[in-house]
Length: 494
Ligand SMILES: [Zn+2]
Image (cartoon, rainbow, N blue to C red):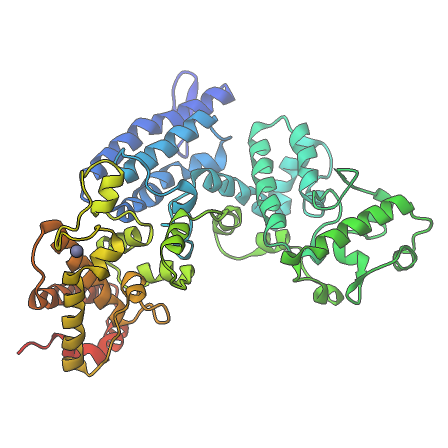
């Protein structure tokens, strides 16, 4: 520990007399460091897929201990950090994929870019987990702040209870923790909810007169979750409910208010999951999240993630062609076919219609015309480049004949398979061959060069060797060889 005049440093955190100053000092010292770090990485020729790992695995982990133990820095700081990351990924040019898309998982069309705001919130939520799992150590902290027993209620009531606490909370660190936990809880109730185990009290999903409810008398008799109002796959009547909980003369207005809101929510077709499980005990989902054994904040982060609602690329593809495309497979395919990020990024740009071929370059004002670089008779768009152009058609036919001669396999190269791969077996060698061929075609278009089967095969073979080397590095050679065993003749040269 090093003492100076009015501050000291302990476990990597600078302590000062004023909390606001402390937040500022601790976070701001990293900005220059991070800037320098990103500048160093900028010089390397990385694809956005490679670049994404830099903020994720090198930059943000430097700040983790601050996000966990200090109140959040103000929003301008977080926005600045976020902007630095996205500028780094896109090389200070326009962001070509929406942030809500790029932060998604692979099968959602994303690149697993870190959502900084969700990440910070999920780190804060680890405190809720600590409180739940070890309540004799941390719970008194929270009890002291609120001057009453709030712990058991946090885990019994719905998200609106947290609003009450947040309003009363004068400690800005715990306020951030509660706000973050509320976010998680709200997303949980919004999306993945199993209605029967949802808390009935202080839950925004069950309001009377626009307000969430709490009836202490009923609560004391054990009424806690939705399934308390259900039996044998139906909602109880007032009399049955009173009998079940030995209550007398329940307020009819309140009972039917709650009953209606439950009914309303059950009628919603997206929640047709529920009624069967009412007969046996079931943990509320929030609690399930807290007792999961996975370390860190991953479960919170995944709960917070909101998939993008509009995928513009899907819309454009659907408008242009009548392929029956299963997008999840297409997105996954892109990352399962190869481990080479250059090829993954190439395929990602095909799927998201971002490949810099002439029609695209003309739309963004870089090229004057969009006439095909090779045949000169049609518009150079993605379909033309990879399939319709006479030159490309010819190379696919030659490849088909070559594969048939070598391996006796009769492969159909139609437009959909060429663009998106064979979806049923994303890891199959044929998808790798298709991807390499597309890349070869793309390079030939760029260089305005004639395509030759022999140089294509050489290219595929080179890529195959790289792929094999990667498998070797990851000690995955047995799987790799098994995958390719029926294709070995493909590269045997005379
Ligand atoms: Zn052409």
